[in-house]
Length: 387
Image (cartoon, rainbow, N blue to C red; front, side, top):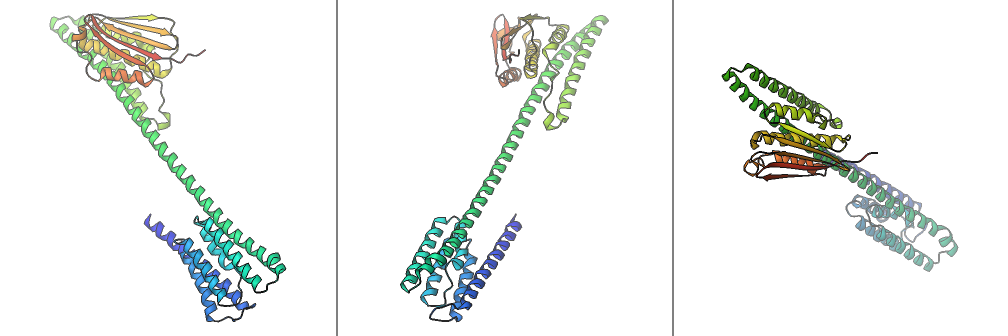
C-alpha cells in the first residue's frame, strides 16, 4: 500500500511537471510573437512564463493559491508593458486546477475579474470595441469557461467513482456480516440438534442398559434382549441424525438449506422408543394434520423430543401425554407428565432454554409449567396457511 501511494505521487508530480512545461512553452511562444507592447521580449518576460509554469507544481496541494498567484503574475506582466499574451491560455490550467479541487466559485470569480479588468484597461488604451467584444473576449470567455467546466466535470466524476467504491465496500461489508450471521445461526442450530439427539439417545441408552444389567442379574434373557434391541434402535436413529448433521456441515455455504431428519411424521416412532425405554407415551392429535413448513416441522419435533428427554431424566413419571393441535395459522403442542412436577427439577440445564430459543426463532412461544401433579411444556408455533 505504501509503495502504491509513493508511485501515485510520482506519477502526479510527473504529470504536473509536464503541464507546467506546456504552460511555460505556450506563454513563451506568445511572448516571442511580440504582437505589441512598449517593451519587447527580454529575460524578465520569459521569467514570467517560467513562473506561470512552476505554479502548476502546487496546483494539487494549493489550488486556490495557484490560481491567485497566476492572476497576480498576469497582472504584473501586463503592468510591466510586455507583449500581450492574452488571458485565457495562461490562466486556463490554473482555472482547471481550482475547479478540479472544488474551488469552482473562486475560479469563476477570478476569471470574471480578469476579463473585466483586462477589458477596462484595453478600452481605456483605445482598443477597438468591435474587435474586443466581437472576437477576442468571446474566445477568452469560451476558453476560461471550458477550463472551469472540464475541471468541475473531472471532480464530479472522481466523486461519483469514490461514492461507487464506498458503496461497493459497504455492500462487501454487509455481505460479510450477513455471512457471519448465517454461520453463527447455523452453528447454534447444529449445537441444538446435537444436544437434542445426544441427550435423548444417551438417556434412553442409559436407562435400557440398567434394565439389561438387572435382567441379566435376574437371569431374564428375554428382558435383556428387549432392552438391547431398544438400545440398538435408539443408537441407529441417533447415527442417522448425526450423519445428516455432518453432511450439512460438509455442504457449501450456498447449499445450507436442508430438510430435517426430525419431523412430526416421526412422532409415533419417537413415542414408541420412549415407551420402550420404560416411560409410556400417549400421542393425541386434534384437528386435521397439514403439511408443515420444514422449519416448523423440525422445531415441533425437537421440542417434543427434548420434553420427553426431560421427563425420562428428571420427572420420575409413569405416563406422558402429548397433545398435537392443528389450528388455523398455528400448531399447538403440549407435553405433560405426571412426575414430580415442581420438585422434579426438570426446568434446569440447557434443554428448556434451547426449546424456547427454537420456538422464538420462528415467531412462536413456549412455556414450561411445574405443578404438584406433573410438569407441562406448551408451545405455539405459527404456520403459514396455504390454499
